[in-house]
Length: 227
Image 1 (cartoon, helix red, strand yellow):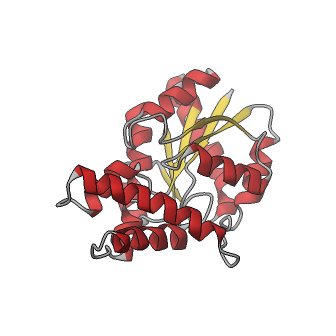
Image 2 (cartoon, rainbow, N blue to C red):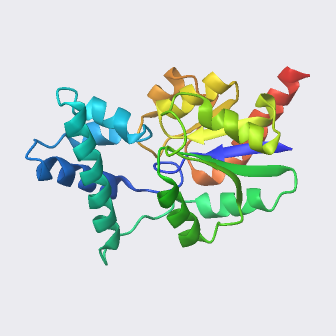
Image 3 (tube, rainbow, N blue to C red):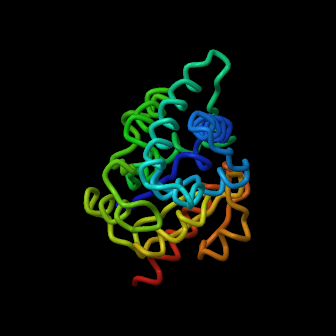
C-alpha cells in the first residue's frame, strides 16, 4: 500500500485572498500595521502561533493570541461572503479522483489548517471518503516538524519509502525530508520553485495534470532505493 499525502492551501485550493484578507483584518482590529501580502503568503503552511511569531515578532504572546482569534473570526466572515470563492487548482479534482479510485493507493492530508477548515473543504468537494488519514494543526506541532507525516504513516501502515508528501512550501518539503518520505513540490502555490528545490524537493510539478506521473516516478524511485 502506498500513501500519498497532500497539503491544502496553495496545493489543493487557492485560498490566498481569504488568508491575506483575514490576516489584514486581524492586524487592523488590534490597531497594528498589516504585514505585506508577500509576507503573509510566505508563512502559509505554518501553524498560526508560528506564523504570527514571524509576522509580529515584536508583539507579546498575549497580543499574538489576540491576533490568532481575530484572524479566525475574520476568516469565518470572509468565507460567509456571497462573492467568496476558494477554487481548486487546475487538474486537482481529476488527480484526486484518479488516485482515490486506485486500490494500491491511500490518500492523506497534512495541513496547517484546522480540522474545521479541512472538513469544510472535504464537504465542498465531496471528498469525505477519499482521505483515509487527516492530520491538522489542531493535533500536531507546526511544519516542518515530521509529526503529521509520522502519524499518517502509523495510521495507514505505510513505510517511509511507500509515502510521499505533495506541497507548495518549503515547510512541506522540509517536513517530508524530516519524516524520511518523498517530497514533490508544486509551482502554483506560495513558495517559488527555486525555494522548494533548495528545501530538498525531489521533483517540482508545473501543472496539476502532471501530478500523477510525478507521483508514480517518485514512488518507483523510492521503492528501488529501498530494495
